[in-house]
Length: 409
Image (cartoon, rainbow, N blue to C red; front, side, top):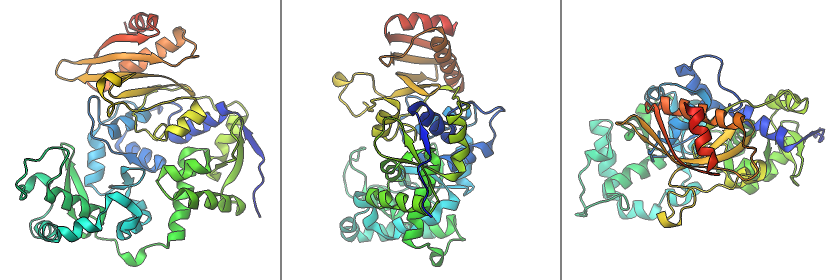
């Protein structure tokens, strides 16, 4: 029997449900443990990887936003222990190892990954690919740096050497996996050595995979429109649009209406209690924190605009003279709103967290409560980076800087 649309959420209530589902509504009551890192990744379903490190690299920062002070090495250890693995999901991501069957089909069906996998390149460089695979098979896990360039070119970030491209292609094809990282550099090894228990005979049917990823996406988001579901794990949006409707008809998802949004939305049954609490006014986000640009809460820029009224773009790829907010701006979450963005750089040797600019969103009520909460988040952020001195240079509106500096003292 199909489910009926019985629940209606205000946008504020929908935000509260999403934040609670993502683990961004409040800090944990106790100090973080290594198991909490794994639990956070399972809760999100995917932890996006990015290498920019003007502050902590994105995956570590996403975890800090949820857990507070924790040991970044725990993430590295979970990878080396085989509790998580790396693959293409929303983008390149750390994923729970139990979800490997849901991604295996992407590996053996290269058409599913577009530009990330090139038959033409493999055919042209078959010799390099085979040589790299043989090297790993005979000598054990390897880094890109273990291979000298053989094409006579000088290199540079814009042009991988063929051996690096071969490693990445074999990784995308599922022949190699990331066994561990050292100083964030990938170390590749054979799939059968990293994940010896896997057998392709256990590969689930495509329909089962789509269904599982749809349910996971809705559960991770707390409340989700159909379009948001397809974006979360970068699954086919048309397939997801009809699939979530089918799942609702079958009772595996609950329908909800979000005030002001035309399309209906969906809630996973495991989050039904959250929607009830939100409707009763008993789900009140309390957290103030800084987010990575690649946090699941904001990685879908259209969703951030629709539900949070937050128009966000990352400007690190924009020429410096054309930047409005800064190189690597971090969204500022305060309770159930994205109230601003700040451009920061951690000067670790000097023990200084430089905040080049802090911009509050138009319409945000700027009072002592907001300033104190943002100052506290900055202190926690700086302490975790081991840069205890916070140097706030500029803000918009301008008066905010002096008030936050006072709160920082």
